[in-house]
Length: 619
Image (cartoon, rainbow, N blue to C red; front, side, top):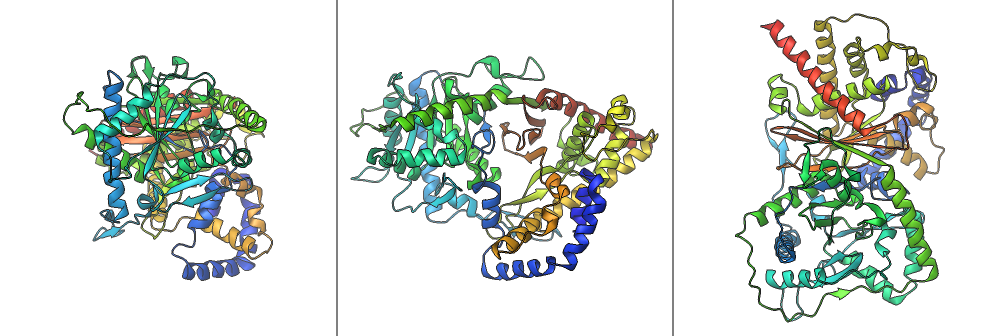
């Protein structure tokens, strides 16, 4: 409760007095009883929080998956000169994936370990996310979604390939033997890629972009037909989906800090992330997807390579690491061969749909909805190279804590206040652990950002008194010395580092608060007033949603904001700098991905100046 009150103090100070009163009542009333129920639940389950967390975080959320939930990742582009190159690359990748699948089947993954809190020993991490990655499917429902846990006896023996909005089932194991060869796989890909687009094809895949209750109802309509049931069963039980996009998104999706920031030909970094997140909507490749599947591999005609993944199935560290590992293994193989022996395997099975008038209307409405969302998404990529994590470490600061404070400074400069900030904290030290929330906004961070902005005239403008900005108090003309600013920064770093450590060790507040709320609901009791309080709603409105997306190689990962007036910010900590993917919605006139990226760039420069000055004084 003390940690919760600190959050209220940072992001909703006008509500602090009332919330303190509610906290006292909660501690004296239903709180201890609900806590005891959590302890009893803990004794019965591998993890008392995970099922409730999945339900609360994903399965009851009605928003469509692309942009709102599924992250995207763009890797280094492939050197592909023709369809045969593409087919061989994909065949090699799927062959490596099948090797990995067999390791999973034998449950022989090497257990990952991290240092314990005291640093004296290595602590194992739960590997369940890896083992369920290719055995899980998110099925839509009208009231809530469900996780379908696939049995390896009848799943994972085929892949689904999407091309020209058409889906094909490709068996990766032959009836008379086990796995087919790389050459045979390549020829199956070639057969699909050589098929021309059919203007009559209705984009059934676009239904997976719709709001979940809408898609759940549309799925029920599809399932009235036996052929459609067969198709959906093939999609649900496949190992993964391979999406082959035959063109590039137009440069209207570009948005870079520098004109020289190019990833592919005339496509900049923002363009390729747009491509991975939503495929450009119904006009481009948005229907060449099936967003419910955990892993969707995406290969573009121009060599674009990456993935989109369904987030309820796992976190980025597990999924991205496998994707990157398999890509590296393919890259280590000898040069591509072009003398393939003709295969006698049957052609891939084309999934033909029987669509009622209702299904056709569902598709039309889904196209309109996703196109509006795609048009609304605002992305800007900042590739910061002024310094790297080594400089931050030389100042004895955690790079993650440093970046989180840079994000707080950036938001404050733009909006003159702090807001509830979400950062994923992996809690895989615990059996079936997923994440809790590292909250970057704190009273200490607020004190520091105010000091950093003392020379910003906008911070002292009369707009601070605007009643529309919840919890804002006019910043006084306090003159902070550079030494005092550094002292405030040190306090903010200490607070952020403790917040990070507490979370990964299982002492975060968000899962705990969620559990207390669910315990009341499950018992059929009234939800305690503390959860109906306006301050609680403010602390749960994550206007800044952030995540460290660290990969071995330079990759661009990101996602959309989680609230209409918010920002999304994924960041990849590199040896040569940092890659930030900043997102917002055009429909909110107070947010801008480009402004956020530019302000973040300046915040990082100013923070380094602060540290360098402090070092000079110390010397």
